[in-house]
Amino acid sequence: MFGPLVCKPGASRNNRTGSWRMESRPKFLKKDCIACNMCLLICPEACISGQGKNNYDADFDYCKGCGNCAWICPKKDIEMVKEGHNPTGVGLPTPIKEGPKSK
Ligand code: SF4
Ligand code: SF4
Image (cartoon, rainbow, N blue to C red; front, side):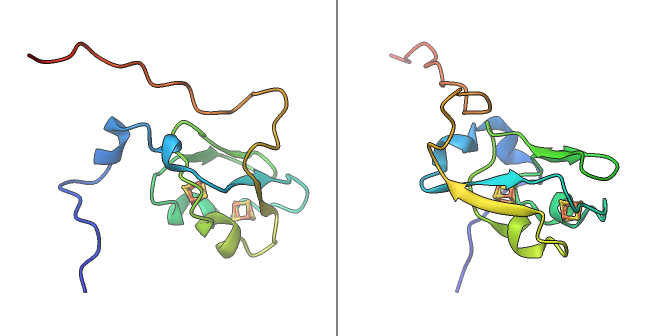
């Protein structure tokens, strides 16, 4: 069985993979984080950043909602919440602007 083929690491940075997110997104609770970096290392989009306890976040322009970060967190300090639970809109993917169409 074959997985998706990616020509080089970080290639998905060229795409706003946050638009692939369908159902849920990670919520960093920032209560019990021990700064182990496991979430950061397992994220297939390399879209988690942070340093120090209770100081990690995902870039929702690229997070595709796979849930790996929540699954691996040893302190259960990340939970997946339903997409759309964000009345302020902060952190939602930036709308993708279409480029000029080729002829
Ligand atoms: S759900 Fe977590 S591991 Fe998956 S893409 Fe988003 S931030 Fe990365
Ligand atoms: S996996 Fe959990 S405890 Fe470890 S850095 Fe990420 S949020 Fe913090």
